[in-house]
Amino acid sequence: MKRIVIVPDGVGDWPLKELGNKTPLDVAKKPNLDELSRSSILGTLKTCPDGMYPGSDVCGLSLMGYDSKIVYTGRAPLEAANIGILLKPGELAFRCNLVHEEKGILTDYSADHISTEEADILIQALQKKLGNDLLSFHTGKMYRHIMCYKRSQDLNVTTDQPHDFQGNPYEPHWPKGKGADLLIELTQKSKKILELHPVNQKRIKQGKKPANMIWLWGGGPAPKLESFYDKYGISGGVISAVDLLNGLGRYLGWEIISVPGATGYFDTDYAAKGRYAIQALERLDLVFVHVEATDEAGHTGNAKEKIRAIENIDHHIVGPLVSHLKKLNAWRLYVAPDHYTPTVKKTHVAEPVPFIFAGSDLNALHSDRPYTESDSKATGIALDRGYELMLRLVKGWKHYAS
Image (cartoon, rainbow, N blue to C red; front, side):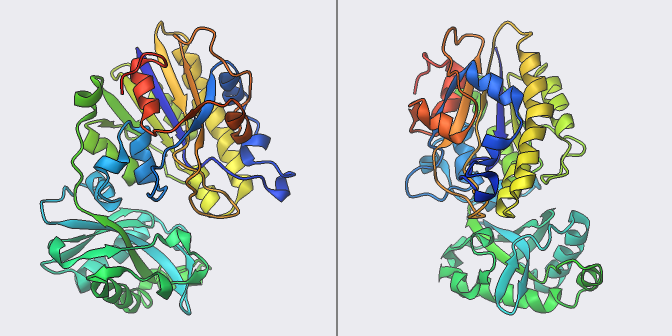
């Protein structure tokens, strides 16, 4: 039995006036997704447990088959794992965004999606000026980086995600709790280091927003996760350009499948992701294919790019993978975003997501509906436990054991 998971991150959306009160999923040309949906099970999945923030960390754990309420400890430790940082007891990791601020307003959570090459130089400058025996800065990808702190007893803070308040004053969103002053001080010091840095001066001349401040959030200790093989008895691998999803994969014991041209942005190589997933199925029982572009489009409020990303996923990933699976005797697949990222809101929403569940053993179960938010709700099939879809993928739609 071969299994595929396809995650169009943040694809769920709300009706838009500019699209005639339709969603990007409604208007996108996606023949493969719609055909798959009509001949399979269609419904909604609650990926975010009550009381938790619908981030890709919490919701990604759900899609991978884990109860976030039990195992989640924070976003940054997961991202840190993918860049080789395995936290020791008593250590914390924080996500360190390179952002752009102007006159107290956080104007861009990604500093114009700064390149990894530029970001690396800036993170090294921060490490040289601010790093010490207790804290250190580490380069990730693009605007997403890590700050590690070695004495967890100093900090017990709550933090806000920068993409949630982009375009607003950032001071009301300062960290709160024990040790918050330390994180605020680091943020303020980062401005003095970054504002006049040659990398940023060059970006200004090029008409780009400078990465003139950091934002620290999503901190936590290392999680304790049972390996996927021990939990489910099958091997797995993940294809993603995002450190968070790859970091989760490392904790689960999955193979991290590196795909040339996978960027985590609109220019990602969709076709390469499809090809590498098919190749990985030869040696693995399950392949988890994650695409970030739909989420980035939601965060930037760009419906046109979201539609284009959906169409690329449909043509280059869903089509080839479904065609390949149907040549096999036994297979299962599901398609589901981790959360909604409505383009009008530009951030995540904890709303049950639309899913497709397909397989060679479904017999006559099918929805006769296309893959849209409204159609997924109309079927009346609603799974309230986020990890249940993976349970069904492994055990079968009707014969899983919770």
